Image 1 (cartoon, rainbow, N blue to C red):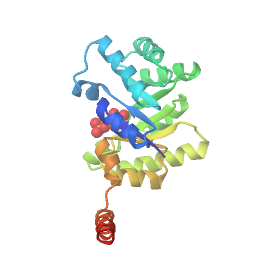
Image 2: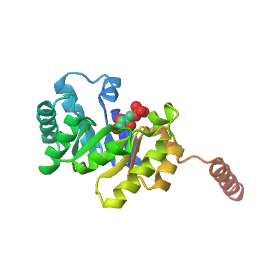
Image 3: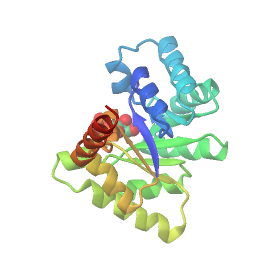
Image 4: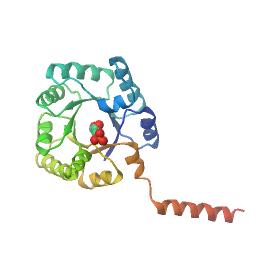
Length: 218
Ligand code: E4P
């Protein structure tokens, strides 16, 4: 399973990259705003900065909501770096744009997916990634992981190559359950990824090993 980090924070991307487990980065306009990145030139430069830290795919989201605008913005984003993935919203125009880009060999990530039907459309359009938002479904008392299972079944039934990118991951158990179900990729904050490291028995065991070593080597 691939691990993407869901942030526009360069320090956090660097930290995850240095752990040696990072496969890519996802961003969205809210995450860019959170880092105070505004203005077209600054936004484009920030995507290049991210590409220079991470050696995996970097999803950069279009702002346009019409097909022509998505194509224009997406082509500009794709020109920035060979690892940029054009992130498109799950709308009729977004599906058309995903088809357009897939026919031209440009990678896409169809985002804001909340149903199996939407994921089926993204796969038919040839999207590289589909992003079901599991945390936001959980937030409204709907089982986000069930959606991942449904998409997995549908994609496997027909051999769709679109990768299931479980998004809106909030904590380590989301990651573990996504791995059990067979999501291809997860994207989440550094805290969810780093949370996988933790176990109290590891901390206790290490403290004991170090204490025994120190005693024996006094
Ligand atoms: C996906 O690519 C989105 O950026 C993201 O996972 C949204 O997560 P949130 O629901 O925590 O904002």
